[in-house]
Image 1: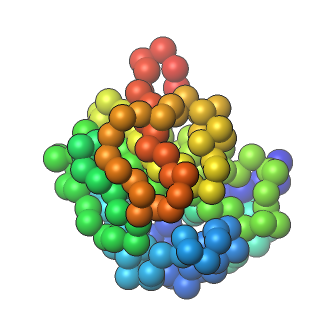
Image 2: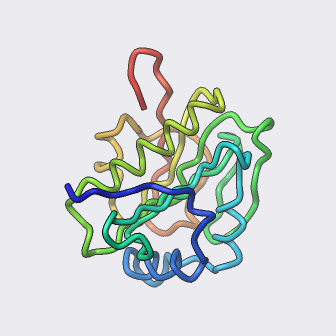
Length: 174
C-alpha cells in the first residue's frame, strides 16, 4: 500500500471533498456543499471525526475521505440534510460517508479511514457505530462488524439502502 497520510478533513477546501465525492458516487448520491461543510465540523475540535487521506509524495491532492458525525440511533438520517446531534446527546458514531477516488481503489484506504473514524468515535465513549449502506455495499460493511439493524427508515438514501450498526466491543479494536 502506498504511504497515505491522514489529516482532519476540516483542513481541506470543500471543493476537494466534492471532487472526490463526484468520482465515487452515482449522481443521485451527490450531496450539496453546504450539507457536507456542516458535517465536516461535527464533533469536538480536539477530537475530529472526519478525515482525509493524501499520498505522502502529493500532500495537496485529496485521495479519499471519511465523514462521521455524532448521532442518535433513534433519529432518522435523511440524505442531503445537515441535521446534527451534539456529541453529549449522541449514542453512536454515524459513519456518514467514505469515498475514495478511483485511482486509489484497492489500496486499503477505505479500511484505514474507517479504522480512523471508529477509533475517534471510541474516544467519545459511544457504545456503537451506525451507517447507511448504499449502492449494494452492505456485504462490504459486514466485513467490519456492521450488521443490518432495526431502526429508522433510510429510504431517502435510495432503493436498497440498509441501516447497519456495530457495537464497540472491548475485546476487539475498531
